[in-house]
Image (cartoon, rainbow, N blue to C red; front, side, top):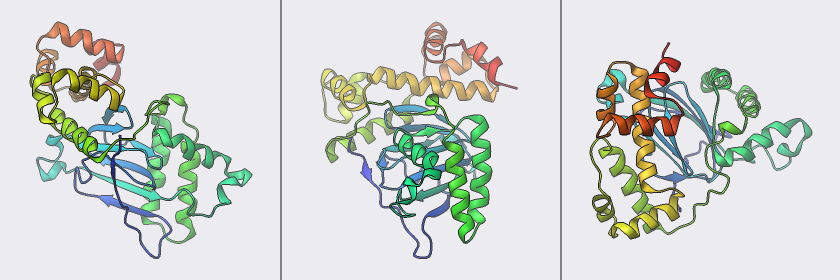
Length: 287
């Protein structure tokens, strides 16, 4: 896929940028940029797309996105329906070689060079690592002078400890296509995220991008590496996981809120994707 190429703003007296994004879905489209991105979500939750990976994100998560890797954050509508729950995140952007062409080849920086290479598939930091990096990002936001560089280096060094299970996009992911096809993908993603609670027919979604159902299935599989039915299932199960963790609804209510027509189907598909039944998943992760 050829995502929307985003131009990241730079500041003359800073070698890299760090800012707080206070507007949800400010970049709510499939996009990429030459800069490496590290993002800490402070408040809010939703669905994230990184390469061909689709999963939920929530407050406290830290994600590292490598250069030119397409990504897309879509916050849940209920998280910004009221000002009291307005989501926000801290975002860092930096060029891979902003510290000079020889810096990453220094033997002491082997770990940083390694993590930047792995970040080209995206890295979702594990619980023990993200807590440490989140604390460093908070300090970095207020830091000045060379302390900024030291904090960024330490954050990347910690992130280098992640294992392969933290990598997001598949090793074979590619993203070359035309601008027209890129816009088609944005239309499909947005429509699905707005309507997955209800029944979505192939005729319906295919017509949005001017394709017949069979052609649409082939198109979506060729551009994303998965069937549309699988993509829709991942979105629905991801949302069900969120509702299970919130603990405010019964299992049957969660089933229908997530877009499933019957509980048996919900149970089977949920277990297929997560490896656990809805009830076991809730008992495991709700404290």
